Image (cartoon, rainbow, N blue to C red; front, top):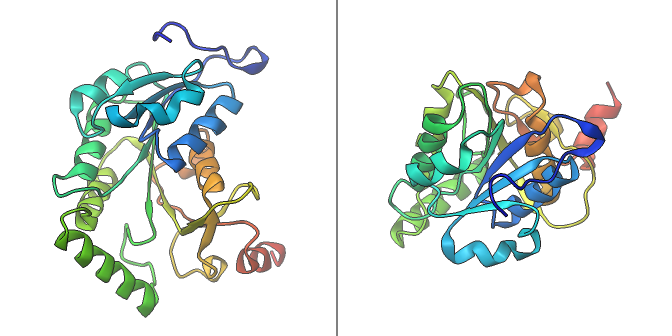
Length: 243
């Protein structure tokens, strides 16, 4: 499919073109499904060796193969896009997350909605409240990843620092622990980790993707870093039904 051969959105709406950076992963594929369900035109970016993972979408999306931290790849993929959904993965020790984030910030349209995914460990203002267990797990994971030179959590922190300092129309979606399973609906969100509604720390991966895609058209989330959790978790149900 060439860049001029996109499907048309439903109900005669104006085309909305979205780029998904990190499209071949589980979260990325769920985002593709949600975006196509809304009738969006989709451009997917993934490493060349992962293109085959997108075979089931090949006749419905445009695929741009390449490293997601390559500015030229990102510039080509986001050209003309109204929104960009980016999975910030901390792989390797070569600034993959920060390079990806910077490429998107530099090359996306000035008015584009930029939605980034990361974990709860990212904090924007230092007011998040983490349990001792959570802090220990992040510390151990970060140390182990650096020791084998496979994961650099600090670079994901740097990526988000650059996003937070940007004057673009960004949202950083901070996800809880993830599980597979059918959709339960749009997750709830709170401004800070530690809010009682987030106590169960669990979200369906398909619903994390749903929140990401929904954020494209939710102006209340512009320049926000929502921490999300599944809407059917006990704590979320207790807090939302008591309001």
